Image 1: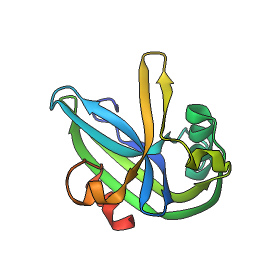
Image 2: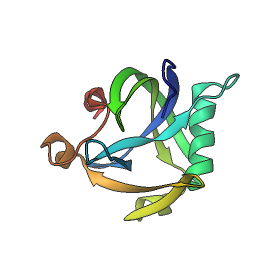
Image 3: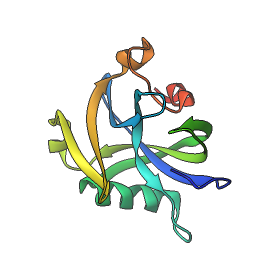
Length: 143
């Protein structure tokens, strides 16, 4: 979560397999709502967004990426956990280098010592129908 008054720059990877995408599950305790987002993370000073994307996938789920293609930039202003956030997202389409990731139902990964997350494959139709919430909304343009 970004600090108040700061804009976070993120690099996220859209990984698609047929009619499903690989996403991370999040929970907003204030809204008591589960949401989903593409995996990735913050861009560090001095690194390109593509390098950040590859580093984040390596750190979070020990996955190498291939066929990385830049899709576009999404600006997201939102409220999560009762706090306003502002993110500039560099979005990439990519594939897992290791095909074993396509066989997974889900996996648990640690973003930090106290934050465990679940990543899983979800059918795009479940987001489009409104059954599940995909953030940011603008992400739908790329599906």
